[in-house]
Each structure stands twice: as C-alpha cells, then as structure tokens.
Image (tube, rainbow, N blue to C red; front, side, top):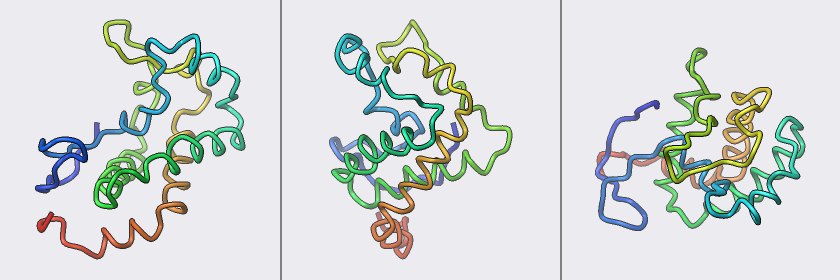
Length: 145
C-alpha cells in the first residue's frame, strides 16, 4: 500500500491518527453480510463498462464521502495518486477476495478486466467533484493538521 507523509490529522470518527489506504475507497462496496441485498444490487453493474463504473463511483464515493473532512479526502486522494504513479502497482490485489477477513467485494469484482482503470476513474472523478476542497487542503501545510 502506498504511504504518504504522516500528519497529526486524527480520524474523522476517532482520535486515532488518520492513515488512509486504497481500501477506504472500497468501503461503500463491502458486501460482507449483505450479499443478498447490496451484493445482488452491485452485481448488476458492469465494472468493465466505463460509463457504469463512473456512475457507481459518483453515486457511492464522490457524493457519499463528502462527510469526510476536506483534509481527510485530500490525504486519501494522495494515497491513490501515489499508487497510480507507480506503473507496477498491483491494483488487482486490492480486489482479490480474502476468505479470512470480514470484508468482501461483490462477486466477480476480483476478475475486473482493468483494475487500474477503475482506480484511475476514481481519481479522475474525485479530482472533479472534490476540486475546491482538494485545492483548499493543498494550500495548507499538513504539518499544521
């Protein structure tokens, strides 16, 4: 997982240090114990279709994550940016199902044709939809957080 320089920023729901990972982008798609409801609904989306991917990202990430503070979103986007800058980064590994965890993505997502494109779409859309907040955070000194 890419690492970014740590700040004193605390989590949005706890006093623990905020350490974002790419998995945070996938939270809205966690179907563990919801396979029969959310899993079925998400299974109708074709993640290999760019238009459907974009619509789902906007519905479940860019519009839902506005509850995070602008600094938290900025740090989260920086982790994604760093991963996308690494041509060898294995985005497919993030989508693989691990039966030992209580985390599960919809069926067939681990077989997505181009996982990098999915994360690149997330990056492109958050850059558009969160533009003002990302610019606000970028203008600040993270050491002051």
